[in-house]
Image (cartoon, rainbow, N blue to C red; front, top):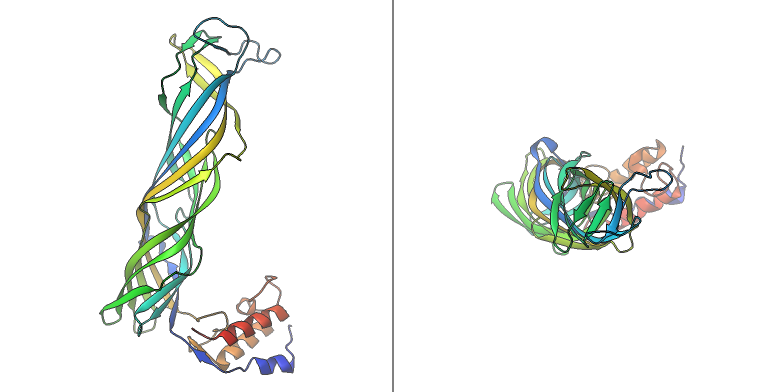
Length: 353
């Protein structure tokens, strides 16, 4: 069992401080929804070449520059612009903290974290616009005229990750207006990091974070039993981010069948190097969440919340002695030691804002 010295026990009895109403909200997945569209465009340069190999596939397709003639199997320069459009209709999970000052009529939100796909995936339509030099193929014979962009729908890809995490405190406290007893409308903005990833053989997008400021608006209703319900809308409109992909590894030797005029299929391999991607979103996240009052910081462990006093000291000592997670306030996680005591003392000394 962890032990505290008499000196530390004395330090834990510091002067109490007080603060405002704090809530820990959990998103009600069944009542919340994401209705949004994400569009990813990416530019690439590369080449395509027949799948011919003299040793392992001697009858494979060969590609040759120009509309006629040539010899051997040659790489044909190509540039491709990809468009991935995803319509998201899902129910988010996650939570956040909210501090409401009913005297100053302000609020702040912290620690917002939401999985917009709830661990699922969303199907995306993938379209590619090709531009290549003219070439012809052998096995089968085919002519492919270059110089004109050609748009082709490709196989469906999947958006595998779409999360939002608050990246810092709100720059300015939001405004709360009491419209009915215990009911406040909320308006503000949250700095956030949006992370997405897409799974596709042709255009894989690794987990990519980008920063955004999300306008929020909604209503919080305070119940007589000190619980609360909140309805929020996070606006995803006009969020645009460019991503430099020039350092990403190339996508190599992707099988890419091409139909010929005769109806046969020329089997070629596609290699691409991406340079730039752009992500744009629209739509909104509708969140319904429920909460009970919570402490204003890590030391506010016991009722009355928003008041740092001896009851919090007792709660910490009890949790610390029992190796309870409530007292595990510092790394290393799962170890109850002096670092947890220091973390508690620091939070206790800071008091509630």
